[in-house]
Image (tube, rainbow, N blue to C red; front, side, top):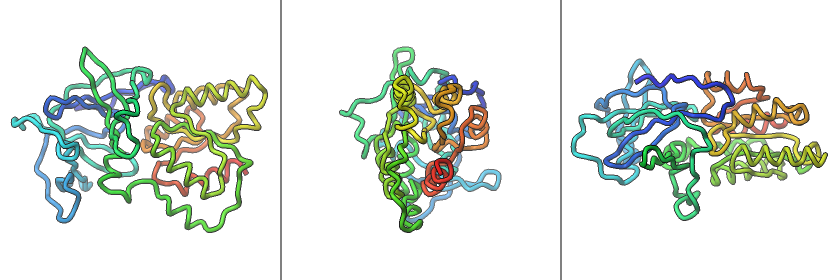
Amino acid sequence: MDTNILLENGTNELEVLEFLIGNNHYGINVAKVREIISYQEVTPVPNVDPSIEGVFIPRDVMITVVNLEKHLNLKADEDRSTDMLIICNFNQLNVAFHVQKIVGIHRLSWEAIMVPDNSINNPETSVSTGIIKIDGRLIVILDFEKIITDISPETGLKVSAIEDMGPRVQRADIPIFMAEDSALLSKLIKDALSKAGYTNVTSFGNGKACYDKLEELKEKGTLNDVCKCIITDIEMPVMDGHRLTKLVKEDPDIKGIPLIIFSSLINQEMFAKGKALGADAQLSKPEIGQLVETIDGLVS
């Protein structure tokens, strides 16, 4: 299946690939998807997480296969004739997710994604980032980064890189705004930045909340005192990071603030989009050490 659907930059849109496991409807951002192929047998690997079926090597690239049915504790249909592999690239990893059936691709605005409330969105355990309603059915958008981190924690944020930097000067005089929808990641990033001396970090759950605050400060005339750097994820409900970047860099009063895109989706295509929108730097999410070094360079 061709997933190469091009979106204009900064329009706050995404495509969601809908798939089935049994009668359950799930979705993944097409920006993460490299290819979709029919299921093929994989080679088991000993002493790994039970969710990992094994590996296969198409075109000289080794890809780990994760069985979503097993990881999510679901019951799939007995008919496996429609089983597919969704091959993804994010956080600098190549991984395939074994699903039962592909339904199709939907183009929509980030505003259409509903954020689960706290009753089902525990930062420590939830693997859902949002829910959309299409033709009367609910599609749960899965947090694939968290799924992989739960299976293999060493693929998450490399917080140890901060400790390797040695003693750091406290830089509370450098206030930072951060747009990140994951409560867990937001906390981890803030903690890491605090260890690096950046203790004055204000978090926002999406790009709109961040931009609204920037506008408010601009009207008050206190913007340059309250925000010296902006860090943004790409995937966020209501307003994504590319839209936030576009709005910031088109505003003559705000565009001078350095903006860093810090996302699991930094590949060649996404990098080109961010650069066209005016991002000052773009980094892949595991590299928290590089994030600190980049902030150092931009605010010095």
